[in-house]
Amino acid sequence: MHVISNKALAPTDFPGIEHVTLAGRNNGLEHLSIWEQSISPGAATPPHRHDCEEVVLCTAGEGELHVAGRVERFSANMTLVIPPHVDHQIFSVGTVPLKTLAVFASTPVGVWLPDGEPVELPWPT
Image (cartoon, rainbow, N blue to C red; front, side, top):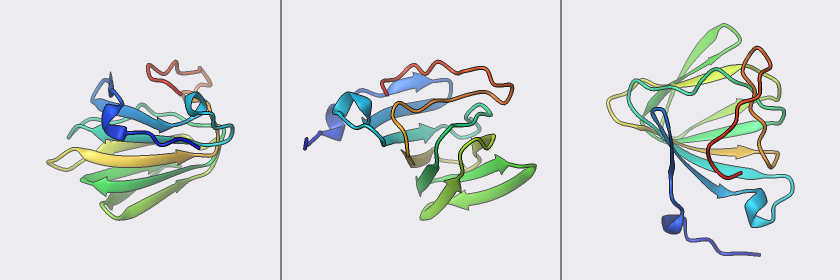
């Protein structure tokens, strides 16, 4: 068991996204990862998928989840549930950054583009 000061964790910048891995493999976990992200207004994740379940809690801002040909709007105090192997993309559509906390049933978290090409993440897993 470990206590981690989230304030001590340095964020990693990805185009339009500020990312912090709160817990994962580097903390001794074997089956779980937790990410905190801030997505700038107008920015988005790349379209991608994971090989594990993902739950995203929106803590601030407004967003759109593009999945399976649909667009679903969401905002603070809403939860996104994304099954494994489903291509999706998250957009920040409000005037303030979209803040999320994502929980993955895997560590490290694998990320693939829709064409199956793996994405090399610039942050610790």
